[in-house]
Length: 392
Ligand code: CMC
Image 1 (cartoon, protein in one colour):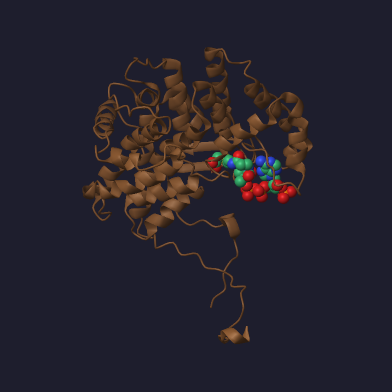
Image 2: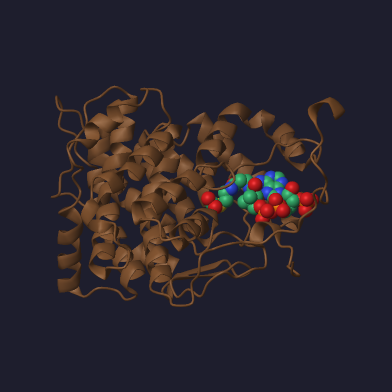
């Protein structure tokens, strides 16, 4: 026995050193390798951010070309994986399909499973960044009964994802640059967020020496929950349930009522006690996309805007420092782009993959890391003797 610190939810326990992402929750600041998220969202693009997170520095032009080439080389899935998709029910949630397919990658790519080999770790990282959009898009296509669309490597990472989701063979889908840019921004803003639940899950799974595909599948499973990445879907469903601006006061009342489990989805954060800096950028993007698509009068979006306004002024939310988080606005953009709510969390997952992989690589290379093994405060019965069934 020993004396352990009781810290449910790990609100005050650091489990690792990390030099990838820095968050100041009081200031509302988020830095990737030191660079503010606002600057990256304005000037960078997703694959450059991937390079930054993975290798620690921004690439020069030649490094960027080389990296892009390495990623696009791996965007295809092994043809056999199609049959794996076809084993799922059509109405399966795309996240369920993704957990399965990503887990199954370790049965396809035997040359990237040896975590002791830096080259294999590198190939696994590139493979996952390259293949996750294809997996997410195919999970979507499968769920709506349309043929799978193969990746088109002449497009950007975000453009290719939109192409694989929205192209149909009988038409020629043209990716609108503004939507491509908005999608790229969503990806950048979700790319990493230090030791959140899914990243900690990836690290914990990886600490046992599990292969990287298995670790990322674990991260996807964790992300699915409505308190984490599932919040973007839950938020849109909540807006739909509220339905119209007149019903907002009742929703606010319920959110404040401690005897009611209802919470305003897309509000609050464990670390940010100020405006989530990602939400600020996302809000701008949402306005741009809605203007572009001319859907400002969409009733759902009107509910969202009014809910935001009221909650930001309500003393309960002000005192508890509950601000809209990234999931509040991303759902609105994705809805306007034509994605069904079930695709919101898969898009979060494919964007976060680079963060998971960067954190996993950092952990494997860190000599201080050990298998993750939390302790407990035992509160069950003391030792007792087994009674025969007649005596119970
Ligand atoms: N609506 C109403 N009350 C809330 C909300 C909310 N969305 N969030 C927190 N509170 C209240 C909570 O009841 C508690 O009140 P009290 O102190 O009186 O008991 C107080 O605020 C602190 O909340 P907490 O649950 O102790 O805080 P936490 O750090 O454990 O939870 C959270 C953070 C994000 C899980 C929570 O705010 C929440 O459930 N939000 C809604 C779901 C959501 O939007 N999640 C996405 C998070 S951002 C992206 C991501 O991580 O994927």
